Image (cartoon, rainbow, N blue to C red; front, side, top):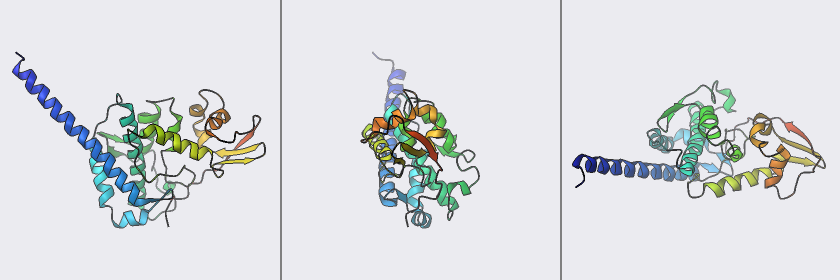
Length: 239
């Protein structure tokens, strides 16, 4: 016969695991509803959220105590991508009205947030919990949205474990085929400073142009003269 203590421990473990899994599903569902309600054409209804922050607060309350394991990579990545985007919105709303996230000192690198069982900055989520753990996944840069117009647009759905791969691919393809993001004039190509700041992420298997061409329908010229245009930190606000 099985040891009674072992059976009790196993039963407790299964209950805790089941509750935790349900909480994660609840987080994704709440996040999805929030984004659907408050994101329009890649921009965020900050004023509306400011006047009625209960839904955002409820989503972040759910996220606060959750723990997600790196062993379940798609759930882990989807959780932290959503958490990042939600916390950016929360940071803007708490300081609203403003014209840019840079109007708030330490917005990305000093302000800590209680989420996922951790106390972490936005840069900590991006650089330590995502980029450092999955160093070959450069597509993170097209789904983490910094509240500036220079960033790829935020989508009006949550990132989900079941659809994460297709969502990462779709957003990367959209960004790299957007003429306002990749500006082509014959053999002169202007690209976002994003590619300058995170150059190492994009040049793991070749040049930055090689990376961009992997996702483009119309290839950049082989001898393209590449320069960087200034990042637009203007708030991505839906009017």
